[in-house]
Image (tube, rainbow, N blue to C red; front, side, top):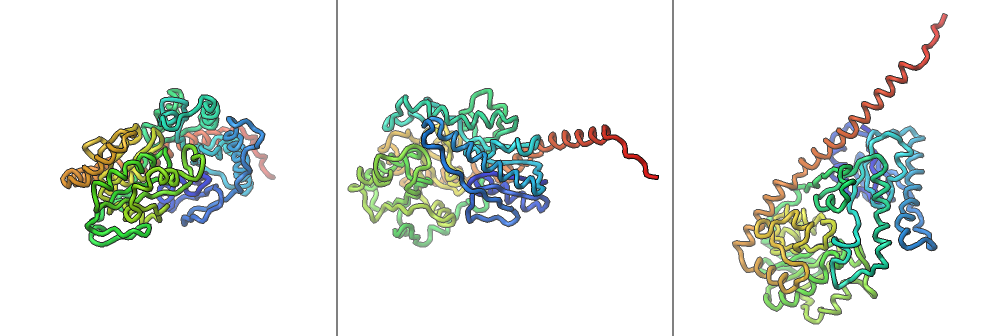
Length: 429
């Protein structure tokens, strides 16, 4: 088959599927994206230049759509160039979030298109207004509602969507859910797995040495920000550091903004250090930024208690991977986390807005070896039962087969009808 993938940041959510398809050695795979240095043997990248952003004179509520249709236009031109060079995909797969795929049905009518639909935005009841510390003014509601414009256009392309969790699916209106397949993402269990050997020697992260006798608490987020409970994690640390002198804390993440709004000044790490930094021991708390994948895995394998907090929003890959590694996870009692963790079984859940309670729960894990061992073992068993990569890829392949099978039957039938209705050629002679 001939596959076309689309995601502004190659390979995006499609790394494992791409590797699976490449390993089959029977597909032509093209990937339209912005330029980057990432590479997968067997995948031909076709870069496009990032378009200019939304027009400054456009209304603030429409700027995301403005940027999306500009990007769709650029990607559409790139796709047309491919078509003129003779490329005809049997299947198009991509992420709808940035609008890249909105014009592709015009380039290749009738080709099945499977779009990743990540989240449907609401003005109340989910992430917006969840945290009373950061109230949202009703004047911002039009902008939030307008963020669904791309969702609506994508859902009305006559194509199909997929999303990775029941929680994310539940954010979409009932009328949209029949167009979206739940594809639970898997984890590479051969890579993300427990490794007791990392506890036998010292480890250095962010300039801090973690000895085998130390207790290690870990926290991971792409960026350190309130959407992932960073402010509450920071407020729990003075309690923890007072309780245990052998405690070491590593908070992994960048200083950018992945979700939500930036602070009035600086970044959220600076804001929280201004609030609680004088009560933290810099020799026992470090911020190493973003880590390479091997170091990240080793850190989680060494962790004595791993903290995962989130607003009611999209669950991070680190939650799945920490369970697969067999971390003793302390998570927020919010919908995305409850889909993965049953409190007291494969992790512990705490109220999102309770830093002292979070500290007490982490301390409980650190001090109760029997509980910690049980949580780690059951976290791994949960991953083996629910996060297997082969099951995920088989479900993905089944959906692709269903979508392309119908389309190929239609194209074959159309070709047959054309052949039957074509005027007969005159015999020579």
